[in-house]
Length: 265
Image (cartoon, rainbow, N blue to C red; front, top):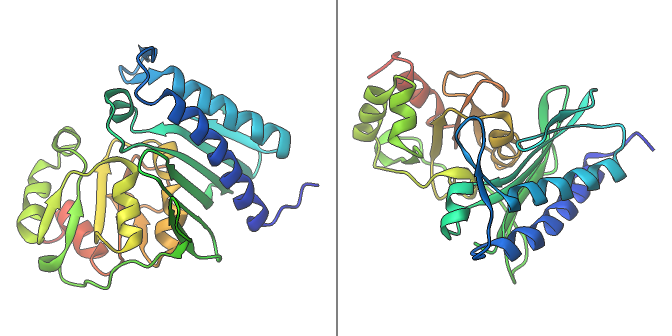
């Protein structure tokens, strides 16, 4: 079988995430966690590697013709269908015992993410979506709920997560961040995938950051979009390939893009 429905693909992604959760939770706060430094000077743990191996094995077994792009083991295969994996988004938190981290699994078709699963077992939460099927979230022990972004339309009433100041400064947009912080109701640095899920849940109006890879972004996009939001790069480019992210409820998106790119004050 090579003609899969998005519902089939989402079901597979959810199973892979459930399997990954068992691996990552077992290693979370372990005293023998092995941490090394990659060539880009970011940390990687044995848990990151084990989770990605598990997900890759599941994809290879269930979708042998699909290609895979993962943070730890790179790209394999080619074709229209590509699974994009971040085994532990928030490794720095994971290795310090902070529960804000998640496994991200996406399927992109012709470069467009159409399935996304974000699983944060230490928070007891999981979110998922497939294009045209809506976005849902579930806390451990509760039934799934359909996600919907907030209706806030004024920057003065907007709550935003910017992840970290260093990223904005390094990208040459520190002044824009300061201006945004002055314009919105509240700006905070929640960081990593959780901030984008809070946008999808309607608790934040926007989340954005620089210096991101496709595997940091791809799984987030269908969830925010299916919840009624908008997701581009901070320069307004669609897709997960431009190196930054801005997710919003849609109402404040153009205003924020204008401030980031010097089109408004």
